[in-house]
Length: 403
Ligand code: TRH
Image (tube, rainbow, N blue to C red):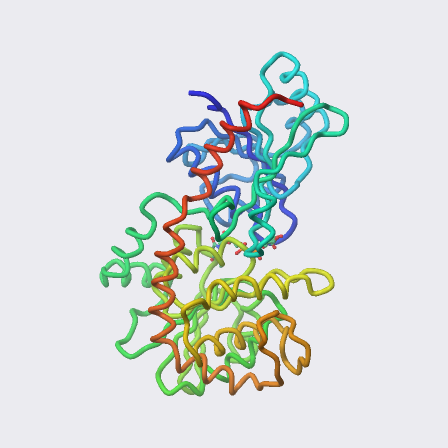
């Protein structure tokens, strides 16, 4: 098999997005493409939270078929693989790059690919796949951009994911077993179940006020993270897994940070999911349920345009007033729109709306938004998945001359 050996490099900048994406990709390369994959990570503790099988004390270990390596000084002297994936411009060790150049000199140039962050912006399709020569080493690096449209690298999606989701969503016993395993009662008939994963700046207290005044019972599920403290303080409960609190129609439960496949089950079993960053954002879309995305904040507000571009795509086919309720609520959740006279999302939606008013509209439209979310997931799944595209792309890169 050509391009059989893969090295995936990941530097954990903060949180779980970088490792969340590269770990998912590495597993898929092994399970679906039979690639021998080494995952080099500089922070094994973060990986352990997504996958408790990982032992952070070990410099090398095989986990779910992936050769997991601690990215330390030893990485520099490793023999380069056939395909080298640099996660999010994480800068490969200089000595490793020199070995790649030596391999290229011997006619075995590795395919060197920089995996970029996901964005729904138009320019992504124009930059996906572009080469960039290394100034000194004579090696070519290629940029691979995930995305939502044809002409981009697509989204990570395991084979049979939507079918597995449908089977789970149609199986109350499997759902009840999962809820019990993470310490949550089974879902009551008229209950609205909501998951919350957000950054510290989200207006969580406003949301809690809205949920407690909801006309039907709501159960909020909060995996351990920044939102845990806000929820615990507001409801006067301990900020630890297993804690429960209630006010009005709201019951809230704090659960442990679950492993990645369980996080899918959590999203699949909720009626509305608050997600953030990149990987949980994509998983919430595959869940086929309404979502609220807190985008990773960037300097000078660059994230506002990115959120706007996603909403422009996501809201296509949604009629008023649903479209407006989605746009406005996500703008408020991201702290972008309140009191804005300009048009930060570029969607023609400006105004000075209250959280309470927008929330009520958003909550009232949930059944239509659910149908929309189901259709959105199937429409997205018509595109080829990221891992399959990356494998094909690596073959094309390998055929090209080095310079
Ligand atoms: O954690 P994030 O905010 O990560 C990032 C990083 O901050 C990164 O620097 C930034 O560039 C990027 O976002 C855009 O959000 P994300 O991407 O959703 O990653 C969270 C991962 O954690 C994802 O793989 C899902 C997983 N997860 C679990 O496995 N269990 C859980 O209980 C929860 C809440 C999440």
